Amino acid sequence: MEHCKNPWNRECQNEDIEVYIFFRGDKLPICRSCWSKIAEKDLEW
Image (cartoon, rainbow, N blue to C red):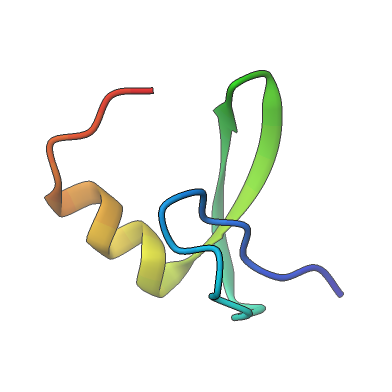
């Protein structure tokens, strides 16, 4: 099973994957918890 690979929270090991994002050419799995936090921020990638 894969785990979250949030580039802004590399310590997250959650396996509840919500979405995949492309970041610097890589497809990264993002968990539900991290995705909620990312969605609230003003980030560009």
